[in-house]
Length: 84
Image (cartoon, rainbow, N blue to C red):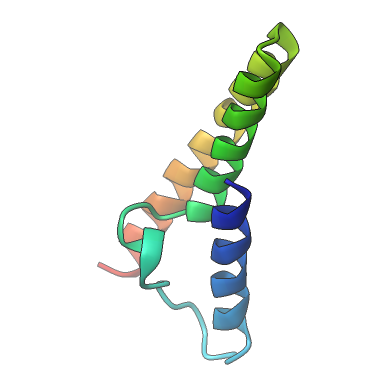
């Protein structure tokens, strides 16, 4: 999850360097999900929840998913409206 998160963030940051407006990221997990950085973070916390096998770990994963899931869906909707 951490590798996915770091990779996706680096791709997104590289798109900003050009100052050419918004672009759709391509390649890797961007071909399957709109926000692989959010996906990677959820995978990180799922892994932590499984490794700790605790209520706290499960709670933190569920909170993260409940926070980032709707944000990813809104981001996907924005992409679809901006780039028909």
